Amino acid sequence: MVSWNQVNGEMQQRRTADNKMDTDGYRREKYSELQQYTERPLIVYATDFLNRAKVQACKGDVQIDLNDKDGFNEVIRNVESKTVDILLHSPGGLPEATDSLVEIVRSKFRHIRFIIPSVAKSAATMFALSGNKLLMERNAELGPIDPQFNFVKSDGSSTYAPAQAIIDQFEKAQEIVQEDRNKLIAWMPILQQYGPALYQQCKDAIELSKRYVEEWTKKWMFRKRKNKDSLSKELVDYLGDHNLFKSHSARIGVKELRAKRVRVDIINKDEQLYDRVMRVYYSIVVTFQTTGAYKIFENSQGDALIRLVKTIPMQVLPVQPPRRPQQGAQS
Image 1 (tube, rainbow, N blue to C red):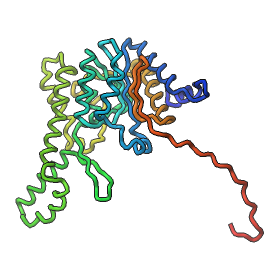
Image 2: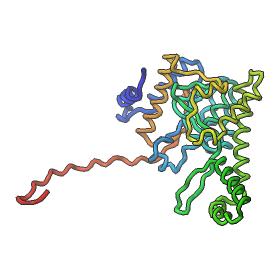
Image 3: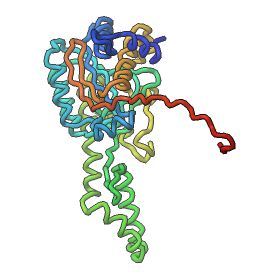
Image 4: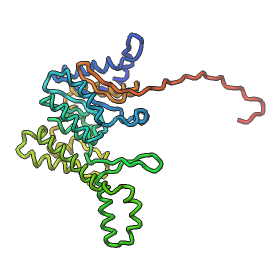
């Protein structure tokens, strides 16, 4: 079975005319090999969100946002087929921007399979569920779709809080204060940091995320099911239940998705498909590790938009010979 180490070794051996590592050439070769096997064009959307240094260097631009429309427009414009595979590796991002991406790909393609070799969380889970089918590595994972709100602390740092947790805190405060008005003083500093409109904003955000996925799954994933309305409703209630998962980073794997009737195939069961998908994925990972690339939009026909940060070259300092200790000196 193919491994990261094997792909990394092959990529290290691939060199351009100026003796640089040919990450682009190798990666695109693997895209072509996957397309030849599936007989479907491949689109790649991947971000280097697991690399903290890269995330900091690109100022957090690893999430789905409206700037991603340019990337998707670039890589779909020359694809003539009405069927396509989209390899997805993303932490998620803005649900509204995800809706825009769904509109872009769905206005172009009739049948979409999303390939998840490792991780697609939050709004990336939402994006994947706009497909007709999922292809996942056995241990790959999606995640809950409950919205998160970003708060800037007094020291300038930021933190995320689940919308449902904020709602629960508001309602808990209301319950406590109704029982004992004297406890309002203790709750005021907590509630004041949220602002008066946040409670309703949280409810609206939860409803919007669920509405998107419910509409998309009824339209595509569950389109041929007689009970598509109830299946879609059950799925979004499950994925959007923060109090069930307790964490926005919770793992939702193949077993859990199939229990909700999501159409998922495990790529490991087809050795040739698995080998080709994972070679594509590992080539992307190695590209992230060895270049300034942090967000890749690409297809198997050679079209690409790649966002990069400047890399700091490693400085090789001269080695000083050890000094001979003087007689009687203490170490």
